[in-house]
Image 1: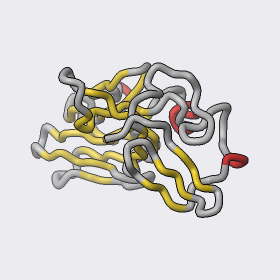
Image 2: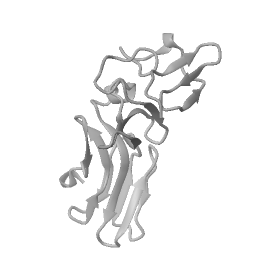
Image 3: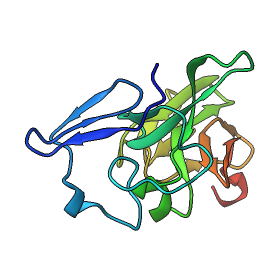
Image 4: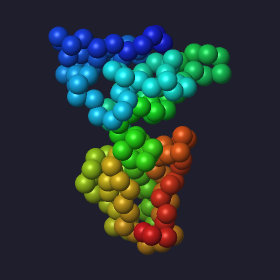
Length: 163
């Protein structure tokens, strides 16, 4: 995996990311949103030398970080210059999920307005990667979502008291 800078071909509208990934129909440099863009105008952040990748599930740019032995094996964090991250107060929802303690079922909302309910009807999860919403009795479920916020991954960020 290369750690060189990402490049962009204006004529073909392709972004060649430093991870080796190619994104077709990428926006032009004049269409960047925000002060910085991971491809066209990256800031001088501490992760810039690491390979850039686009996560289509979470819809966010990520930087691969090396393991203890210096190899890149998929350990990733959101790129600090990603527009989605900056517009959501530094928060990205990677998995929107909860475990129903009544029927012992894990349910996952994968897209915005993807309202999912467990088989017993005790718990519903909604919001995909856009927001966390739960419908269920307090104490009857365990949140299992994974959210990147304040520079780190947090398991179970949902406040069950507001459910």
